[in-house]
Image (cartoon, rainbow, N blue to C red; front, side):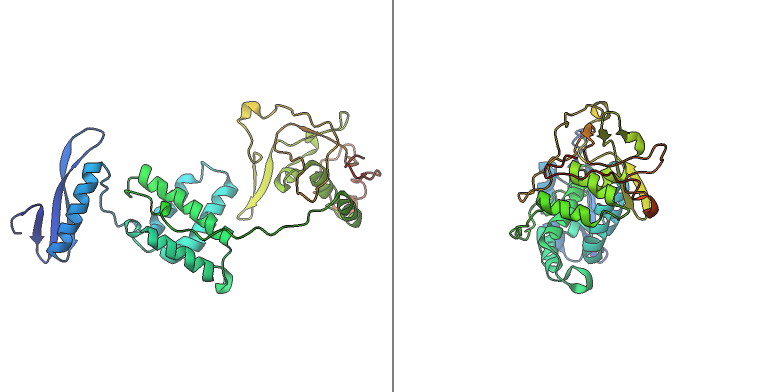
Length: 324
């Protein structure tokens, strides 16, 4: 090995540089060697960049961690901190749209231009069988990737900056105006499925605004037939073929989950503007759906057998306001 000159030295057939890096927590500096450069000029350029980063307190060690390896580790670390369905969304989008394209790249080699190009490719042929991917999906992928790379900067210290922050996103397309059902449309629908085994499920969802998972989570213990009250205190979903029970979306901390909200007035059916009361709370909704609950039954609305559908359905029909 030749002598070190201005922080650069030749080692065999490659070049290396050395700088002093100060530990921001202790204030102690130490030498940091980085090698493998094919030319002296390349080593000097990398040395200069490292010196600038070290002065700013932004220096990170060289790492050969790939994009795929980091994202898989990141996903594993988040499995217990987010809801299973949210985690599954992270996993599926990152694996399908990111790892399959740039997974083998070194994480530290990813630049804003790398991600901008990725988004363009996804828009053109990122869907199934090479079809274009929707702009909304590409933007979802960007949000997940931005979150993961933020952790690579702030928590893991692998990146000096987040390349996703400077990547160019596709412009959002104009939202298509949808015609929402009127109360009369809803009546027609409910009448058309009056013999279906899931009629009670749709009826409860229609007149409470509850999400699908919240209605699926209902048990007879959530119904108070004497007070005509239904309580939404959880949500049910399916992830990888497994039933997952959890809290409703946007729920407050457990100590506030049983705080009731006054919903004694009639529920409104969907309007053309799309506005209607939603069950985003762990409180109560008045039972004004005409749903009859057989005494002693252990089933749930929407889970009844087809033969029991008639027994689970009340005789009253809703008027335009949603009152029975």
